[in-house]
Image (cartoon, rainbow, N blue to C red):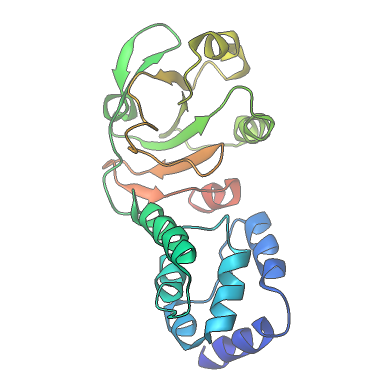
Length: 219
């Protein structure tokens, strides 16, 4: 294992990190090195990795290492400090924050009540987002276990657009419009749409900012 870590670091110094990360995002897996390997990287190597990992902001060890670089500018400290704060928010193992929403039938509900002790895929989406439509279509075709439910929440502020697009989602899903100001209160941070969480029966977060392959691997 130690040899593999050394090889990774040597390759990183030759090949741009984005090539690893592009594959990583496609495969739904993180190919970023572990905490020990990150600690042994030079400042230039870790900065190269961090610059290429803009979308993978949940890699806490990488961000902690970046913030130890003494030559960071004030702007860089602020940027990576913010990313670290976001990475630590709603991290796996913590209880998923509760919020209120109205469902497609007009009922007032809460996330914790709707999950109802079942393993849950929590999907935050934007009806006008093309990528959201692609992810929704992939979720539609997934053969999920009977004890897994999907809760799809529009966290934007346009109820008319939400109602006009409800029919694009399967009837068996719980489809809702957030009535709590989720984004304004930083209850959840959405770096992009859609954003997916996998929640356990105990309401603890299993996966944050999950990809479809990661969801499939947890079945």
